[in-house]
Length: 322
Length: 276
Image (tube, rainbow over all chains, first blue to last red; front, side):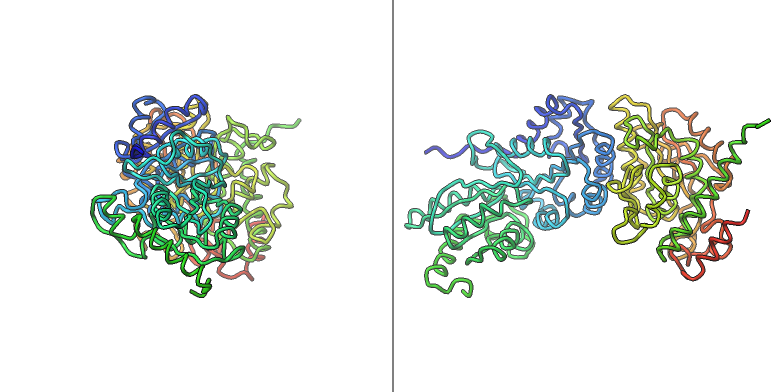
């Protein structure tokens, strides 16, 4: 089997926006002086009259997008997830989510993908922060193809959407843009012993982990959960009941993100032994992206280890108390 | 023989009605922000009863002029104006700041006809107004966007991000009005964090600055807007010198009446503004 092709989500996002103008003639793309990094510069080159670069002013760029949306345009803001979810958070809450404006936010450089820039530029709290705001939809696609689908779904949806993307070329999970429904997850791999739920670049790692587990005689189901909010409760509860143990894997602090979202669903519907793979409530450091993920507990081996641990807990009957 | 009434006299009558409604709503709720609402009464009167191209029966008309109350705590003044202008029935005034009522403590565009934008966290409205002004450009519509800012509010950094961008884009369909009542929650603006020299600041950001020495004078305000309409290629700001708590002797220039300092005196305030 040839290794899956690597493509960057930001390039896929830019292409999706370029393609979208035909379907959405009211589209306007905005950036805050990082258009070369977010690749919104590709859109700017194709449609300069539909591009606004507001400079280094994230609060203002969200407000301007809100005004454009209130007047019937379809604004798509591009900048770094760390800046959006922290610096422009008040604006996202007050000027976009509360007034229910049709603003799409492309949050680039999610997780540790700013790598060598260091913890100042890593976004490891964004999912938890954004998820807790009423009325915001939060999407976390797993690869470049799914990014195409997620961006198209976000644009077609009426209401504010935050799409969290990764900077680097990442392994392909899908051969072509998959069907995408907000509020729905996907079973990528069947399995009966336990379930691994993943978002973003961790989806590819979850699949790798499942393959490694198969070699050890463990059958792991893999769920891709690109719609983190609203989350697919049905798919999660079904998987929990059928497999009896879960691991969540996310490029995020273990507080507030996918692990928390899954735990919130299960604790009320189908409590099962569960382990969250993610940053262990710490800042990371500068370093090459994938090496950084491995060092901070986001490696394939970490998922495998968590799977074995949670499976042992399930099998020895200690269950939730373990 | 019946003669046509002087428009200024008519507008002054509306201003009196708005002022009284603000105080009635506030008295009924027992709380609110009377000081900064009363300072904006004539500005809102002139806008809604003379300047704005709007249709209360069709509040979402795409070509309407837009207004944003960036100083969202002045909500009671906006609600009183919208209600009296016919955007919603007067019964809605009774729901101001009350459970189940549409008139939230700060404006909510999803609940009140005529409210084009929600606001409350200060400093955000000018960016939104700029977005609306740019949308008019994209859509080749000729509407104008008006944004009312508080004087204390411009201590927020985002205001200056928006000011810089609006200057850069040269949006002459954007007109800001500064309710310069000199008082913020904690005291006088010049004591807390001075904002002068105001004109120099806005000039430096590429704006036309129009001074309105009496923001409670209908003729002064009308002249200021006329000047703003003559400006080409850049946004305008009308610096309207006002009085916090205007019209109620014991509220005027009193920071304590940014909120309701003493609910038992609100009836007295209604009596005072009701005198002919």
